[in-house]
Length: 436
Image (cartoon, rainbow, N blue to C red; front, side, top):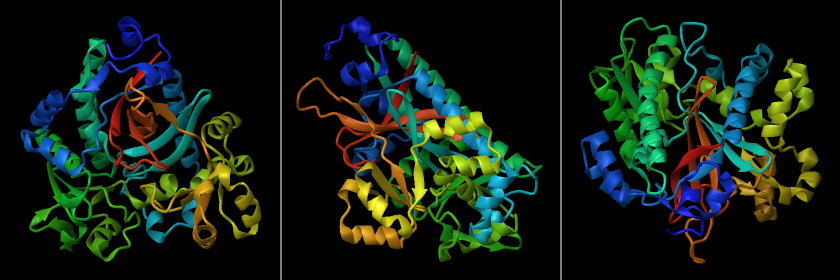
């Protein structure tokens, strides 16, 4: 036994999550099990080698523990945000300043597609949760399902069996989610072909996940291809890849508003409602634009939008205060910078994001000239990765994968540094066990 906890204590579910994150080392990622899980999912054992060669810090050896109290708070906050986004006043206010394509209806039906794989990223603390940001093309869901299958629990085998069962259920939900998006868009014929679209998909860091999606959908009778947006054409009222018509596009692009030259055919097909796109520009504008966090944490603005007091309380407790960086408040924000994190409104992947205490005067001028938000810092929790003094604790956040307001899966990302980076030895995606 590696940890100082007794075996029975480490394997029991009555230990506080923080204590297990600090001292439980009996759960580990079994490379052989992962290889077998990938082989079963892909019928291609070379993908394990691909992960090892291209992204050795993608999968962490240790799981993370979270209390069910935090899990309930996460679901409650997700639903609170969903209720605000549904308000006509909120939608009008946000879409009025968004690019025109965000106002385009995503489907012929009023309900329309909602967008697959929203990612709500959280830090946890003793009193509750802190929502850091929302993404509308969050990666890692399929990898985490396979990771859960491969997880070994030498002290608590019931955890491993539950993880396996949950992963299989999640994969079934993924297939159902794409079919539901197709039907919500008003399509009456069966879904035949999905294109997972990203810039040069075979070069992407998460390319192994793309292959997992492809095999999963094909096993359930839906063809999936991987395509660069520039390889698509809009001809005769249909989006095509070569001669193949595309029914639905699973959008992994960071060109959220389809403004790039390579996105031209996809943009034209979307505007003509000739293809179902998920997630789509409207979803990004309503949920993922970081300026929205300033609305969610402004009591006066929420009241003006007609948000119920109970919903306001959930939002204000679960989201660190956020404001749009305004040069008029530069002196105050500079004075408070050590308590703030600065992020570009339309940014992604922690690019051009800065912890206030690290910024220089030059960077500060860039922030003032750019389109940024300032968010109150909420420190992440830590996971101790081993019993030795040399086993440095790693920070972690929790990513909740959400569809239509419901949390479908939670995963952790372990890292060191200012933000998640998938470059930390021993870090990467990690399974999350929820404890009473």
